Image (cartoon, one colour):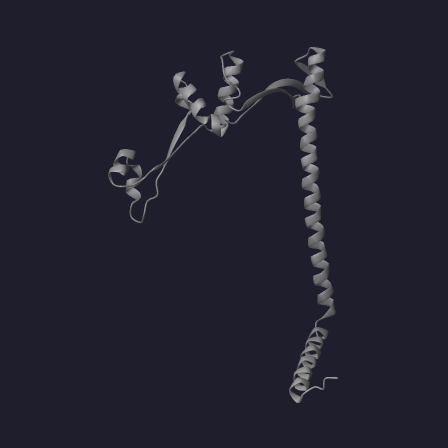
Length: 198
């Protein structure tokens, strides 16, 4: 059996003293405050859980709304052959819903087609340049001048999402040709509910 040396005994005594000192310090904490802190932590956890549950519930409600407005109600209205109907003090009418987002791999094709058709006024060209201290006045210079001075302007060619959506909708409504796949577009009939004016 191993016998402890005086150094080991002193080390063990110091460790036990530290443990008892910590226990005494914790014993001096106001138990009322400790309970208050615990209650606050539990309240925070409860609120966080409620937020998560509410967000999940909202997501489910939005899915139900989409299904009712885009699938169920338009399908029944199609079967009935109506474009508009009054129900419980509200007017339900069918409305064209357009979504469009040009796929990255079709961007060049879409922009080329727009330019060929003379419709490139919806294409926006952004030029981004970083200026250093004291160069504020140069921000208004043209791209050529910036390049002459050694700057490397970064350009971004794009179509604003709402502009693209409006463009696709106008083409469809006017019966003009458009490649929906190229513009990442799809069209659906959706039910729109409006309250009657009193």
